[in-house]
Length: 304
Image 1 (tube, rainbow, N blue to C red):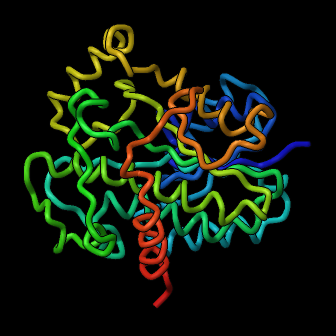
Image 2 (cartoon, rainbow, N blue to C red):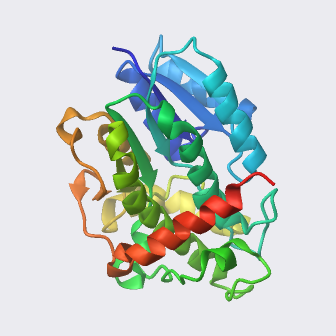
């Protein structure tokens, strides 16, 4: 049976490749993108590789809670597509310079990488047909520098402080943007572990995915131009020689596998690095933090 799968951040990089792989398997893929124009361009590239691919572009800005609500409402109002089977929460940002705010006044990294996806899941989970799947793209950077090639460790705070640009303890220190990114990836794991038992009765599994370091993606778009040019020029070499570094095509294939493989029908609440199960950091298993994050996130996304 043909089913629909949503991929957020599908206008380029990992999201586009994953969407293409899912479409090649015969699924109807919804490319949920902040820019409809860029999403349509990605859809055309996918169709050039997979003629006849069933694709749809949905406007979705995860940094705007109103945009998330509008996108979800549009999806649920249109009954003409195949039933929704899976949601791939892939979109993410890494802010390097200063502290930026979302449309709702939240710190941009936390808002995009966690809060927008949290609301999207809450709005759509009851409409995912069993057996359904939710996959959140996390990262090994949540483990700290020893396991992520020197990337700064996450700095967990009360979720309201993480969401508030004025309260965050990190301020504008040189590493602050990367620390916030690592912290958001830790939040993705808290959400995975807390969500899995909550949706089990709906016949939905929830897993987290580490795509590895992918030099070919656009996550460096906030870096200085000269740094981006050097980084991109070195990308093919880095993929071959650096441990933990992967091609976008390889990680996209792995993410599509995690979203559809029948071998994983009963696997939930698990962290994968590529196609291998991996142990996440000890702090990612702090159940009290996970519940607190859930409860505060419910407050933050509530309509005023």
